[in-house]
Every structure is written in C-alpha cells, then in structure tokens.
Amino acid sequence: MVTKVANFAHTLKHKFSTNQLIRNLSWLGSAEIINRVFRLITTVVVARLLNPYDYGLAAIVLTTNEFIRVFTSNGIWAKLVQADQKDIQELSQTAYWLNWLVCGALFLIQCLVAFPVAWIYKDNQVILPICVIAFVYLIIPFGLIQASLIQRENKMHVMAFAGGFTTCVDNILAIILAFSGWGMWAMVLPKVFIAPIWVFIYYSNHKWRPSKAVTFTKWQEIVHFSKSILGVEILATLRNNLDYLIAGRFLGVEALGIYYFAFNAGLGISLSIINAIDTALFPHFCSFKSDPEKFKHNYLKSLKTIAFIIIPLVLLQSTLAPVYVPIVFGKKWLAAIPILILICLSAIPRPFANAASQSLWTLDKPHWDLRWNLVFTAIFATALFIGVQWNILGLAIAVLVAHAIALPIYTFVVTLFVLKQQPNKHEVVAK
View (cartoon, helix red, strand yellow):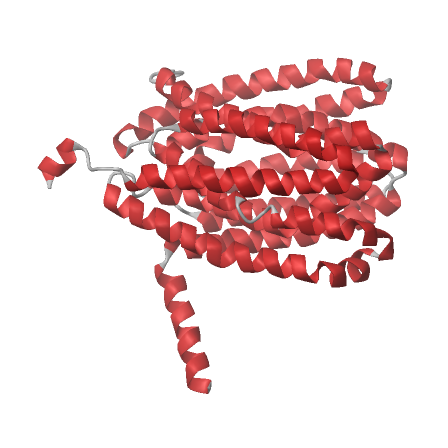
C-alpha cells in the first residue's frame, strides 16, 4: 500500500513538473481560492458594519461600474496573446495607444452615466463615487500591455500573484474603511487604491516599454479581431445578470435574495476554478497554433484535464450541499439548497464550452464564437422566461437545462472543426 501511494505521488509530481497547463492552473487556482476566502470574510464583516442604505448605494455604484468595465475586456489583449511573434512589437505599440483611447472614453462615459443613474434611483449620492471609481480607467493603461504579454508568455505565477495580492489588499482596505465609518466608500475606494498596485506588479515584471511616438499602425487588424471578443464579453455579462433581473422583476426581492445566495454559494468555488482555467487555456492554445497536430493533441488533452478537475469538484459540492449549507450559512438558507444544487450542476459544461471558444479565438475565428453567443443568449433568455413561471426553482431548472443541452452541442461541433484542421501548404513545404 505504501509503495502504491508513493508511486501515485511520484506520478502526480511528474505530471505537475512536465504539464505546463496543470502548472499554470495550480498557480491561478490557488490565487482564486485565496481570493474567495478573503471575499467571504469581507462580505461577512462589511455586511455587519454597513447599514442597508449604504449597502444599496454601493451596489448601485459597483453594478454601474461593472457594465462600463466590460468594455475593457475588448479583445485587444487577446490579439496580443494570439499574434505571431514577428508582429508583436508593432501590435503592442498600437495596442498601447488604443487602450488609452478606449479607457479615456470609458472614464468620460462613466462620469456622464452617473447622472442618469442618480435620476433613475432618485439619489444624487451615487454620482461622486461612480465618477471616482472611473479614475481606474486612467491608471490601468500603464500596465495593460505588460499584462497581455505576460499572459502570452505563460507566466501565470505573475498573474496569480497580481490577482491574489490586489484582491487581498482590496478586501483588507474595505474592512478597515468599514470599521472607520466610511459607509459605502468602504466598498468603492479600495478599487481605486489597488489599481496602481496592479499596474506596478505587471510593469515591473515585463521589460516592454512604449516608445514616445504615437502610432496606430495595424489598428484595423486589432479591431477586426477584438470586436468579436468584445461582443462575446458583453453578451456574457448580460447572461451573468439576466437571471437576477428576471427574478427581481417577476418574483420579488425576497425570492431574488434566495436565488442570489444560491447562485453565489453554488457557483462560487466552481467559477473561481473555471476563471483560472480560462486564463490559462488561451495562451496555452496559442503556443501551439502554428502546428495543427500539436494543437489538436493539446486541445483534447485540455478537455481531459478540465473533466478531471471540474466534474469531481462540482459533484462533490452538489452532494455535500445539504450538509454544509446549514452549518456554514445557517438554517435560514435551507430553502435555497435545491436551487443551489441545480445551479451548481450547470457549472459542469461551462469550462468545456469556454475551451471551445478559446480554440476558435486561437484559430482566428472569434466571429464564429460571437455568433454562437448571440444564439446561446437568445436560448438562455427564452429558457429563463419560461422557467420563471414556476418560481425560482423553475428558474434554476432553466439555467441547468439551457447549459446542459446547448453547451455540449457547441463543444462537440467546435471539437469536430478543430480535429479537421490541416497544416498550411507553406508549413508542409517547410517540413
């Protein structure tokens, strides 16, 4: 028995040392778990120190910022990760100035949006914090190119440290400010304070620096690639909030609260791991895009790795939900357990579809992924409107059914496309 255990440990150690994807996932996954722990502690502390009014104001500010912030996920970074090495310097210089244009515009837009948001919610106190948190857009362009290049080079330990450290600082500052009586500002100001830290980490960990010359060479190439990815990100943000909007509108605040708890408690850990997988996969795929055979091999190998990680995790969490929910969160959330289990199970097909999407990005087909996201968003919305007729349980069933049916079909179709990839003629000649 001892020998078998030793052999198993040796096998795991060998796989960890030789499999770059697993190594990257271990870095990013560890950072995500640390982030979750800190967020949980902060949520408990801040919820006790802030009154419902301040909490509501902070929710309005952060939600507004979330809908504007999605435009920073505009695909410019993805183009730098996916680009050929011979073009990277020129594209990086152009991307640097494009980022300044985009982020400068987002700063102005968010400041202007603050006024209609205040009018909608009939509270002018949200105007200043919405404008203040917009200053992040004037800070992050200093490190965006370095962050993209670090991801391109598979230096996931740097990304894990940047994400983990800034999240820890964010949460610690939130707790300190909440204890100091800063009210809703305790949830807003830390987002601004950590932006220079985020920039410093990436800036100091990559040698790339912009030249003084302002240039937009090859901007068409970047925009052509990134516009589809921006569309995908916008649709993903819409889907991530659509069920909340429908639950709140048709079922009331209390039902929304149960559903919101179930969603976060059910998908919290799984989404952390899925986010880590997404971050690691794209540069991993891009490193093999010039060799179709290696790309196919690593694509299929990645799907197996995802299955090995996600399926046992989700099944374990779903099975133990009736045990840990009343112990960790209290008996008042017993009614949320069936909802939690259904939503948790919907996590299983998600990373496989995400891997399929990122394979299309790698193969310069992001517009195909955009078309799919348009179709899936329509399917998802239809399922939600049908499911809400049976209260939050019906809504949760709709979430599970939409993901369990649509995403595997998409993954299967994309996988067939990937497996049919053939070497380019000039590559065959070169060989």
